Length: 436
Image 1 (cartoon, rainbow, N blue to C red):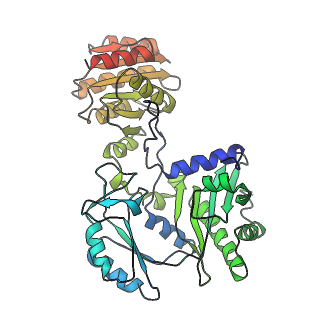
Image 2 (image 1 turned 180 degrees about the vertical axis):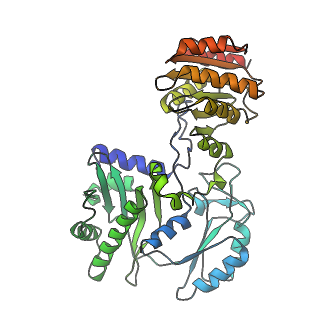
């Protein structure tokens, strides 16, 4: 993304990556080491995002959501009026739906049809079956809902995204007349076709800015003003739901003169949950690991993995380093678990309860560098977990920092079979060796 320099470039890249990540989804493994995204984001299904957009007067395709074959068929016969074609989409929190495969044998999670009666067979092949895509687990994700929407022809595709920009301390709108493709690719091949408007957070998006964006996107004549109006409504959505990003691709023009948001991805500021309760209540946790849901109740950041050495660490960076060094010494981390800075004794207990619910765990490595965290609280939590849970696996503990002397005294007097480590590498070596 050579055309987008400085913090704006980094912000856009990070936002694009975040869109591809579900709650705590693992990043790619490189060179045998493991990296993860510690932050969990609220992810909405496509139909939920479109309902939010409609609430703000944004022009979208007419659609209905169906959770049964009969509902899908009824929706199809209703929506076909006035259009030539319908689009049926499986609703899951994963990309690549169009090229996915269902456990029923049906190919593709997105289908077009001109005959509403065809929707019956499509719904039967989708609902109640797992859809496997490049972004799902190997077993796929169960499809409980599908959307049935009016298919509209697209005469021209553009791109528009609104996101927070640290460099300007406010929102920025990134737009390009080259829609329908990754914005990174546009920036690389056609840097002159990337336009940015920095928004004063107090003033908001002005009419002049909205009209300038519509011009840069290539909307003309009657569509020029209407496109500007849609851009302003998108900005109102961005502010109104405390979003960190609203990305529309394509922001399209139809042959009959409409400006339509055909697809949108919305990221939310999790810190605004207290004032966006209706939005966060839309969170569909059915596709989330139950252990992640349980961990979130105690402000723990947990991600399950495929290994057998559980990690209990404070701080995302230290957690990633711990997993990397386990891997380096021939072991496999069973999880990413960041206790956070405000952890209390009961939180440590709950952390142990969550990680030991995975029967693949054969050892536990506790790696704490106490700054904000009090090592004595961690030690008390470990002893409480040992008393209340049947741990039954080797525990390797490395503690450094605040109140570490008291923490070591608590552990030494607990009677627990705990192996201590002098440093992170020593802890990793001992954790891997304990499996033998």
